[in-house]
Length: 453
Ligand code: ATP
Image 1 (cartoon, helix red, strand yellow):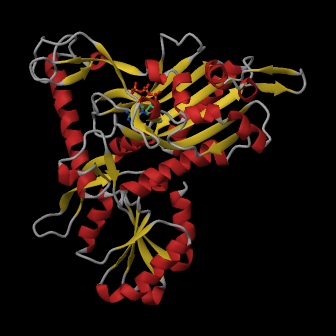
Image 2 (cartoon, rainbow, N blue to C red; image 1 turned 135 degrees about the vertical axis):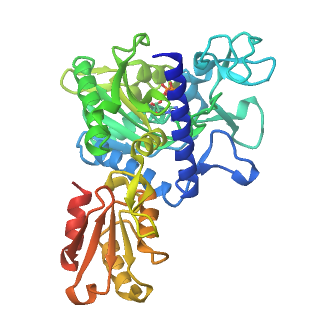
């Protein structure tokens, strides 16, 4: 690609992201934490529309990975655990990025993310410090004394408590190998350079599953899980296959037999949303070494009468990064019919979110404020049928459609003056903008079928 094309592509990506970030703020999807204090870099708040969206993605993951399987159990561990956990995992000594400081503009960068090696992306200076290790663990103190002995860490990943709790969960759930343990929760990393909206944050949600198995056959499990994870993106979240790709790791950790990332084509380029890793017996043997509780970290095979460290296949993704991916994939600008004077069409911003994760699944819009009472009854029935709904009677119907399009509401139900007599409502489809008259008696069933299609 020529330099000119590259520059045009970068400008488009910047413009796209600026529009998405502005929409997310304006409509209360995602915005900077502590904005009235100027924001806090790397921390984000999810508002009234972002919260249900992120939660539904997490719930879909949980259903797909835990509830729909007999061989995966759930965990919700504490965020702060014994500091030795992070020594055993290697995070205290090795969880670091190489960073360099610009001596001129004083900005700090990750060495592996410098677009031009040795050059400050902010001011172009080559006056950079030698690379230094920068530990990403976030520290706090636990107990009454704030000294070295009382340091604890906010977890940098959700999987370590899974390893530590392996035996307790296995016994409680009466599981035999092979089986998995999954958890969704906060993780914290003192990222040097948070960037690309929520893509790299300092506080984020991870969704991880550790699958414990015998070493023999573990590569088959690796293959199984990587396909399962691909299907999650393509079949559950409906991300187009052409926007996803595999990125195989060329350099593997000494204990690993295989590692691959699933990457998405973000506006700013291909980047990781999930890692699927074969981790060998590394994690369990490390915790045995540091805790001296070998029996808790091994699996006793009743048939062979042998105890051994289980091999682990991990699937690890970020809920915020997936939320960003679905927003990037959903954002669109097109045109819609309008009743504005002198215009037949008007521009609209629309989020083509898959209905299962749309913050509002059905909006109920009475044609006139006078129809509030029966329209509220329709909303009540839809709520009872477990749809996420919103009632809106402010402004013209066109304006109300536009408001719903912007937050990705797949269906708008209009209650009009005929509804009293024909006991039917008009359902408008966000993507096709087609309208269909649906009897009230069939409404829930139809919406359910469309949303779960
Ligand atoms: P990266 O190379 O992007 O720093 P990583 O390889 O260190 O990521 P993992 O430790 O494997 O990431 O974490 C698994 C997943 O957690 C990532 O695929 C991503 O979805 C998510 N994740 C990791 N770091 C962040 C972050 N700083 N902000 C948001 N999500 C993150």
